Image (cartoon, rainbow, N blue to C red; front, side):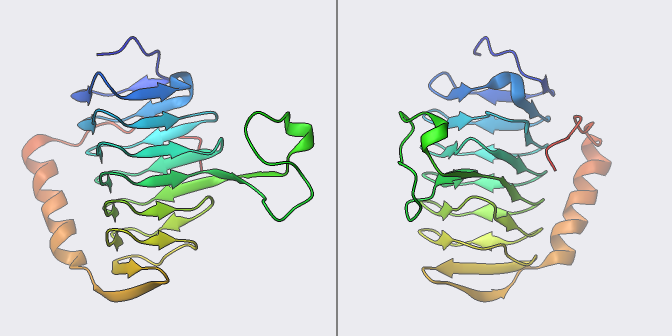
Length: 190
């Protein structure tokens, strides 16, 4: 395990050796979390990873804003999860080597609610909230916030069907009954 100094960290957390976390002091991690090799996380502001979260290989979470991955959420391989962006249409210069006074950067909070799943190679833009239980198909582009418990896919993104909310929430309660409910770390991201 790395020698990161997290804001807080729960039990049973696996961070593979080839993962890279910048700003660990701003990151709260719950319990039963897996962060695969080749994941890049930039936590420039307070950020949160809940309980029972998996972040798969080749995923990046960047942008300089805040992010929140709630309990039971998943970022599949190759996801790009942004919390900020340069305004390429504005009057400022655009790239990270330029001092902030000459850039026009928008930073916000990007959220994946509980039981949300983002499929492989999907891009989630800054400021988006993906609703509880929403699932995004592989290779999609998420440009705006999404309602809960639906399956979405594509570019442009479209709704495909409803997810089985009652079944998923029942299984969550069974898991808690069998294994206990982990404590939630302090969260001031939202």
